[in-house]
Figure 1 (cartoon, one colour):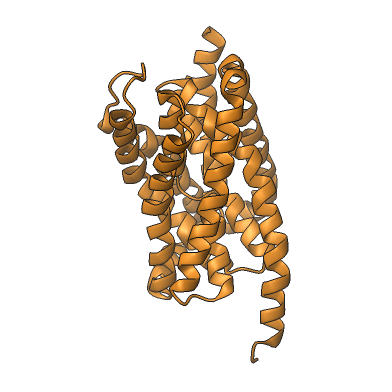
Figure 2 (figure 1 turned 180 degrees about the vertical axis):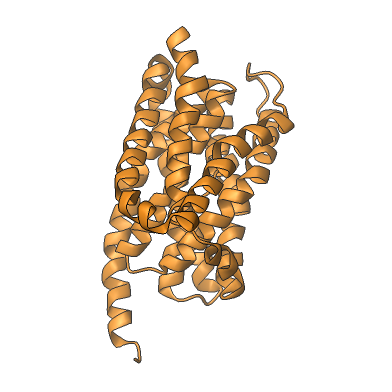
Length: 292
């Protein structure tokens, strides 16, 4: 139990900080200003992230009748911003990478608001959990220190020491990926018994959330007359959540809340990877026929 507590209180925040610093090294001020370049795409993407994904998580939790703690954890995941892997897979899918990076940057800042709000709503809605009262201010402070500060540090290092960060960026990416694996494996191992008892429900619920979020967001983007490359970026943002953030926040409240995010992390690689492969051919064909 002490090992689990130490992992949640120390290991998770450190691992997430490394990941967020690596994200900061990929960002510039232009990524935040780009919202004025294609406001419609960013607005539709953020609408999906801030409203569609969290409420889909509420719906899926109810549909699969998850126990309160796991239901709250699923909503916490749904309220989390897009992850850096979304940028990579968008690039591989020949989607609009600039839009993807912009949405990741802005939604990471927005997490300061979305995560506490939806976490509190979920805790109130799914009565019967034993996690106690959740301090909204406390969650805001946690999210600020484990996401915004490291993100700002990464951006500062890139701007202040461009050559040095360019040389070490790939190494830090590898470290960040290892940190991500450690977080997921640690979250699963620390609550293995709970996961085994509820694996079928959690697996189906997280897979349903993943597929539904990607499909609905892609459909909304196309109905809004965005092109395939922009719709690809938006769908990837909805399919690849920053599950590390969800696990880290969960670890400071009740590690059981981290189980949906940990399970989701396994599925999102498969579904998003298949989607990227399909859209790569489709987007590649449209790029080839586009006027020069």
